Image (cartoon, rainbow, N blue to C red):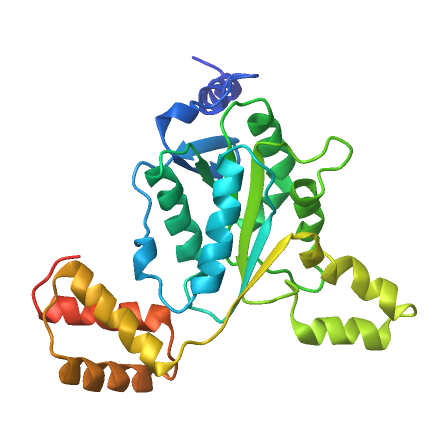
Length: 278
């Protein structure tokens, strides 16, 4: 009978990629980074919306698109932090811009990294460093608590240590917080630390390492209605303006907020009632 330890070792060996093996970057234009074992999982069909449907964020859209095009062309580009109101299209914008870059005939790989996997970021960079491809690393909903040490791992991407950030890698993150930490925790550091300036500096200065800060703010009612009308036109859902306005405003009132996400949720309900499959 085979020793159970031998069977376990053989199973782990099958799961782990061979030492020195590089991922097949030609397998897809988007990947998700997983650990235990380390691997890049291809994503053949990315969940995203068309760039033209993201309304009310024109300045952020244009700035981020230009930065991404520069990077895809092999030119200098900044890491970017997209911060602000929830549901206003921060993560949707990153994915839509990636699609726009591909549509313009430029090669760019999108790699999603989960916040909890940031300690493994150095290993990921080693995989990407020697490739001829260019990579947009993307971390959605990035934030840190008071005693969270994961932010130190992020410096490997933003600063790169003595090796420097690979020239073929740029990092985009989205967050509801401008400084990636809750404001009350920052204020608590200032009020209780022996050297308050030093105590706060290490944590809040992380966001300073992003070359681009793009703010997202709550949309107006007109922008909210325009988003829904854009979805209706794009997906062929017929509805008159008066009915759309009345239903959409009632929907936002029941949710207690108005945003791009709420606009999409109302449209999803509307499309279902009108018999349109999304």
